[in-house]
Image (cartoon, rainbow, N blue to C red; front, side, top):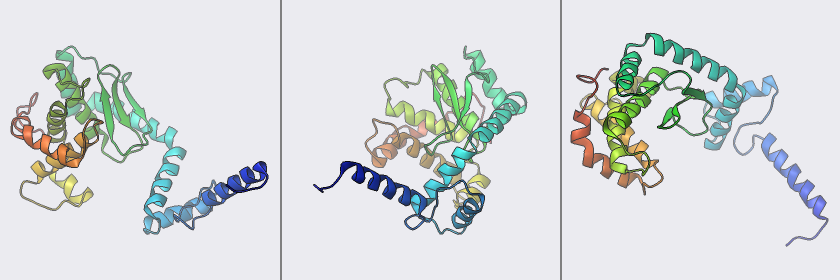
Length: 244
């Protein structure tokens, strides 16, 4: 235990914390409101001169500054999709036929801290992450497939059944359009041609299942996805076939 005035130690700790926050020495990122230094942070980010932690700090800083703008843009896109997107309107009608009621009042745009595009809670509706670069139509459709599964197949969200989770994640990734070829090719650097759609669906479903609190690890997630794969991937309801 070190000796000395506790207040001095506290001040020293505060100063050290302040210096570490303002210095780019460790991560390459500098916390600031100065426009010039913010541009320097952006340049370092674009030229891969930030560490992994620096990248995280840069993205969080950008999200914090742009939260209101991002949410407004997300809400405008949401309203447009609900009115004009063929796939969103189709899913909206199918959910309504099952007694569901999705509307802009329970499809919320928020700033997310986790690396996710959105989420569904059966009691509260759909959450769309406004600060994520995922195409909003794909994300909204993905969550609407989950809502459809909850109403039509009684998917068990309450007990966190991993087989239920794997099945609805397979269907949502397959039917939403997020695994179409050009999206994988240009945006995710997945360049395999044969069975590209199936591999994307399997990969993304396993990632989603692995984030469930009662999933032990990636190995268990992949195992559960494989167990339900054949029946769940073949099930395209409410579509006649994979839409995109």
